[in-house]
Length: 270
Ligand SMILES: O=C(O)C(=O)[C@H](O)CO
Ligand SMILES: [Mg+2]
Image (cartoon, rainbow, N blue to C red):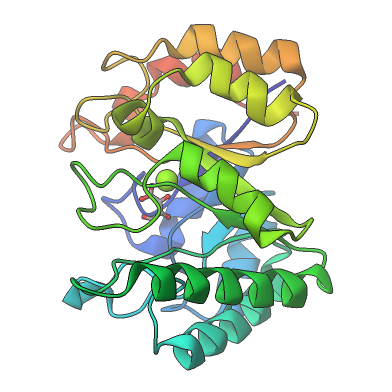
């Protein structure tokens, strides 16, 4: 049985953040994820998880000044102290929330930054984070995010580059967060990449996220054959999480109106 997590930054966003947990459980999700928990006390989030029997599947390390356009710190030379402070904060939240996956966003390096220095900074930060998190039993995720539509200039933008980075990083508790929406934009070849990342000689994918393309809407709203891909995941026995990180198409009708695709996979009461 595939396990789906509602991304509460994207789904049920017509209500206050802490009320989205109840909505996700009511809709049949077994887990939740979101970009950042840091505006809320960890204990308040923990209470919602417990009340609604939800697993915290994933969240991100602090990613810098989001409003100012920052999208992560790992590949930003000179920001190592901020990266490490964010790592400490994320660890404290993860402990309270019982979360065993954290995503470190790479960031958008300044124009003209030395590419070798950027890469060296990224490798050093990710290695440090991985070694620190290993002691907590946490897997660190690196996610290729498309630089064509959503995040121009984002440093880690192709699955191929992310898979190669795993070898360069060389830490056992680092995996790729394979977001099929971003991957479809940058590379395609989704089915074969899932087979490679989940059933190849070395496991390389540690978390999945879904949305359709174009538009980042519900599965089924675009060109990606999700029922076909979900059948592959079932055949492979994928027992990790699938984060639903899409923009509900009909905001007025709410997230629930677009959950038809989810009916075969929802958690049943009892
Ligand atoms: O944008 C995405 O796809 C993500 O998963 C990241 O967490 C950053 O938004
Ligand atoms: Mg994603």
